Length: 346
Image (cartoon, rainbow, N blue to C red):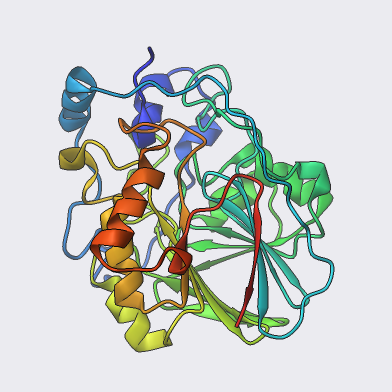
């Protein structure tokens, strides 16, 4: 069984991948802040990723569970053509990729349609499910959110297809714009934490996360990571991207208010000594749900690519246990089937 290579996949395959893909762009230059030293971004209260020696230790001691070679999808997506005020249609495509449909607006989160979450398509974590909604069946995509530049979130092949077919507005963190423009994306806006913009029918705010960035050994944490809040159609939705459990969930509630829907990662969390600072486990995701006071939370970041040591179904089992532990009703924190569409009505 091939051990999972997770976020540091570039360490093993970088010698063979294209230099343009691995370089990750020039990064960001600007004044120092509470999370930027002038060259490199950092987490105010935690490390920004693990060292190479810690990665080697993980790979040497890994007790990764066996995943199935392939899992068929059973849910049938329902692409909505019309939505009313106060409605959001949420379709789980795979991993952390969701189609979000508001009144007059279609958004994709961290779109990944490639076979592998990798700098190359002949090795690295390979999908065990087909996308729940075929690329050709996507509605017009107005906006794409790119939370950070890891391969399972910023997939150049998928972004190139979206540029060709939809020419969407792409929103991302500081330092990613030059890299995306170098690869043919024409409409890119980048933001620091808590900054954002109004565009047509929605307001977007880029929010903090506890994570890191990098597409190879070089250029680590030179671009920013984060999540997004979308306010549209009378609803407020939070897409967390990748993150460890941190105070930013309480900060977000205080600064931006109660979320109608919070999309929180529940996978890629074992072993905890390696993943704790960068990925929540299901129990921490439920705690984040409570910190946010969200009306509904939906799990992300599971069931498609084996990035870490837990089993394919472990996030769902542990989420159910965490809901019971924290007395959260099942319908307040959902985990969708790949391809399932949920319509939230405020």
